[in-house]
Length: 132
Image 1 (tube, rainbow, N blue to C red):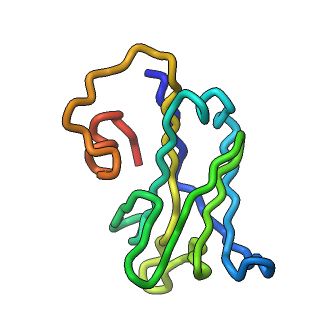
Image 2 (cartoon, helix red, strand yellow; image 1 turned 90 degrees about the horizontal axis):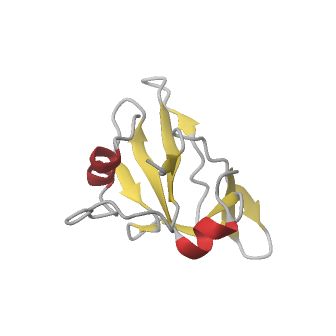
């Protein structure tokens, strides 16, 4: 009941000249210091289209592209080796490469989560009743 999740959000990466990486900042106003110290934060990327999702947990590495996550109060930073910004697929008109976060506050009575793979978005979505 206390789980907080975002809609699918656009990510806009900007180059960081100092580190030769790409960084996208995602605002997460409900991400508090308490959640950072006592809870859990999961971030997912839809590598496919909004109409045909292919969801992967972050951090992500496929041999070519890397996306890492850095968390701070109210902010989720995505760090990549390429510009993996959200874009609109010309053929379908659907968005691709959107991100979503799930915040799980600590200090609350635990729900039985036996057998849940928190890196499997489909299992998490079903378990937490997330809506797309």
